[in-house]
View 1: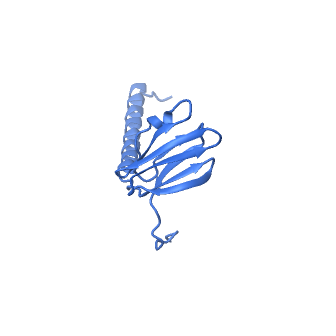
View 2: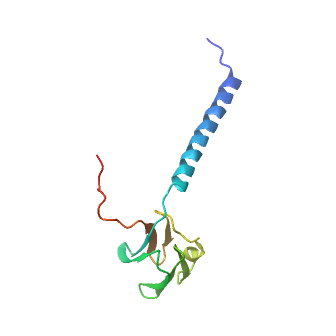
View 3: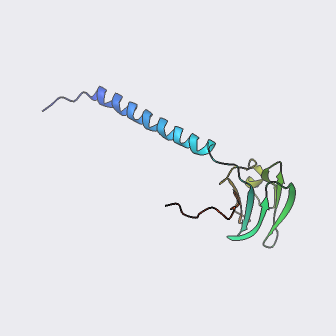
Length: 129
């Protein structure tokens, strides 16, 4: 039988894992930093579209959900955040402002999802072949 150098095998494993983690970190950073700025915010309540607002217009909107549910959405300087919420944990109100495409704020108790997107210009193809 051949003798396998276990120390070398472990060192090569560590090098492989480090290289793999570096590739994943670089890919994640590229996806995060190359993501474009959004120009609209879509609010859904219980899976249904509640409203869509432009990030270019400063405003404060109260989102009423269910019996006593309320989330106050603030849009200012191209960013959106939840100022106050009637939910018991308030995690959505503690979330940082969002402005990049694909970012979202979720309030599970009130079933509210606020998502940043880019409005269609209407003349871009749905599929590129």
